Image (cartoon, rainbow, N blue to C red; front, side, top):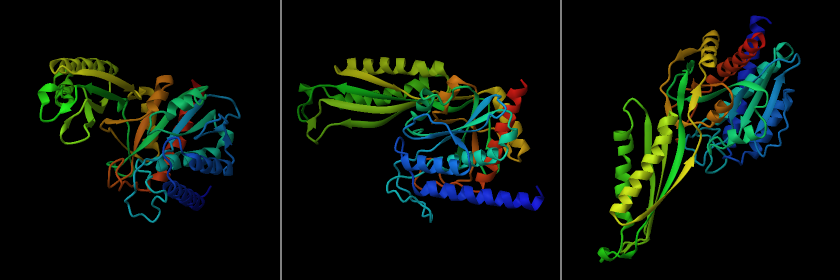
Length: 388
């Protein structure tokens, strides 16, 4: 293929990926409701002659290229769901679904992996194995990865790769590091029960608001006094519900919050310490307390060997590799890594706002080079396993 022909092909693919990304951006669907998104992805894949793997998923798509000569299977994963956020970007292709927005860039992720699929399809006859593409629903709920695993999406897969856009990295850069990259995500609900009474005679009741307030304050000591400063952890109480009017002390208060960590030892310690603290405070105020713990995705832990391959591939395609700061945001990509080796990277997108902001944007110049990166990464991963 001549230089001009290559340039024309690159321009054509970039235009196609921008068109796809803008379509997805205009029609965002939240977790487990990605029905039209699923149809659109299937349509683009089928149009390119890429075979669909029928796993009877409610939403989401799994597809494959290669495998004509046997060989290993590796997977590339993109998430497809949006958020219940009203868009405020002012873009001409802004969301047309009121109250929904691709405010985390999953439209970008989907377009990148579609681009990689199109590129790999052109080389299908020479691939030394199979590349499986996972277009996963419900990442924002932390349940989509488990759904795909339960439906057999990882069957036979030896390694998996994924991405997240990173607004604070410039286009042309990629953040890659071994080990912990994104945090585990757990949630909790604390129910504090007292004895309701008239606000003018508090001594005749048991005030759950006072007890719950002390709990909120005391829980801050978990990170500051019970966990090593060399570790990273967050314990945040994010809702406080109690009472119905100004002159009545309520019977009950409900607190909710989240816990983020990078290491399983810390992750298992926090709920035990949290339970001890709230029980102690409740006893001091003659209140009753109960705790519900909601275990979410573990932390993203990048495989050293695959991460080194990711770094080498990034340099080969012309990306600038940086060592990113770990993020205390969560990613259910970690569930795949519990089953097989995986590597997850941050793609620079020169964004104005951070994830989950109503003004969130990505720079579409990152689409084409990211698609080439993942196509090359898939080939190199297959070659490494085929020769090994």
